[in-house]
Image (cartoon, rainbow, N blue to C red; front, side, top):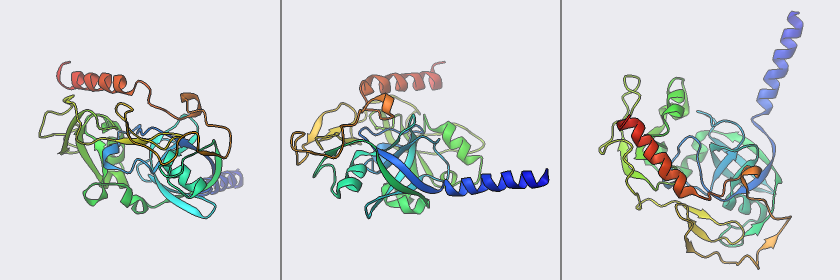
Length: 270
């Protein structure tokens, strides 16, 4: 019986070790999002991994390689099953060019990944000390789980009074958290106030066209160097639907407004 136990345990340990690297079918993801409330205005939204596993408190950085090219990605969102990556990162790995220069279309491509130390993704985090920027109003469940253990996120986070990952509601100000005495942050402005925020826009790169668009309303702010008619295609166009694991963000403003008002009511009305 003991031999069987050791055999099973050894197999599980080996499988866990192997999970740190391997191959995935990477698909392009157009619209920035974060299931744990990482603020897109404070990170490089063109280098994000949207993978099936729950967002971890330590393994938030991964390298992805294809045909001699490698990028590092922040793993800060959970997909419904696909191994999505930011469209620009996918386009660069496939073609060697940014999606704004030579946008291409396609679906899943087999690529090699490896978990990386968070320091390898430091340049993707645009805060003092490269601390992970979280929403003070909507990231507390995730942060509490990280603070309850000896984790990288628990030691390297900063809270902002911004309500949504695309930074369209709230106030761009740093909040403090007296953990574990308090489980709610203190901010210069009342926490969770749904003020319209326009000073910290988040941009997406539109699939196929390479256009840069505002994440909050879909407005095109910069045209890609190629039109969709001139874009190369390496495989059948990707179905950018919720079913494939990607989220295009249709109706995004309505959802964000609802979330903002709901959060505010929980904090101060109910």
